[in-house]
Length: 195
Ligand SMILES: [Fe+2]
Ligand SMILES: [Fe+2]
Image 1 (cartoon, rainbow, N blue to C red):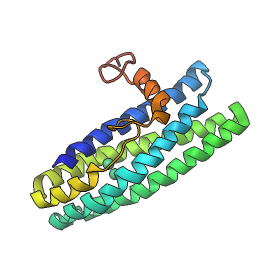
Image 2 (image 1 turned 60 degrees about the vertical axis):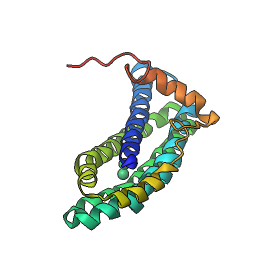
Image 3 (image 1 turned 180 degrees about the horizontal axis):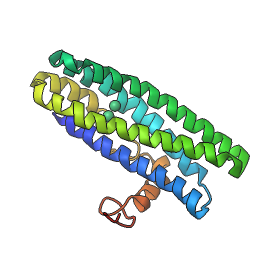
Image 4 (image 1 turned 90 degrees about the horizontal axis):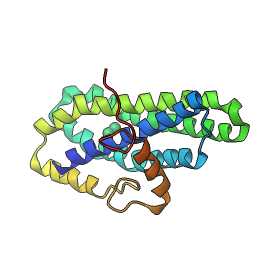
C-alpha cells in the first residue's frame, strides 16, 4: 500500500503548487506586482511534466481498474475521474495559451490568464478531493496485497522534478518561490488565519 501514501503525498504537493499559482495571480491583481513569467511557465511545465505524465496516467492505468474489479458500482465515479484527467490537460493548455497571450500583450492579457488560472486551480483541487474522499477509501478497503504490489511498482518510478528525491536544478527558483509562499508550518510564508 506504499502507493496510497505516494498518491496522498503527490496530492499535497499538487495543492502546494496550486496554492502558489493562486497567490501569484492574486498578488498581480491586488498588489500590482509584476508577473514573473519564468516562474509561471515553470508551474505550467511542472503540471504538464509531472501531474499529466506520471500521476494521472498511473491512476488511470493501475489504480482505477483494480478498484473497479472489486467495486463495479464505483464505475461511474472512476469514469468521471478518468474523463477529468483529460479535461485537466485541456484546461492546462488553455492556461498556457492565456499565459502566452499575456506575455505578448502585456496587462491587457491579464484578465483571461487570471480566469484560466482560477478555473484550473478549482478544477484540479476538486478532482484530487474527490479521489481522496470517494476512491482511495475503496482501494484501502478492497485491494489485495498482490494488487498493491503491482500498483506500488508503477508509482515507485514517479520522478517528481520539484519534490522528488532528485529535484531538477531547473526547478530550483520555483521551489524557492513555493517555499516562500506556502503558509507555515509547511512552507515559509505567513501562517493563514483561521476564522
Ligand atoms: Fe486523478
Ligand atoms: Fe490523483
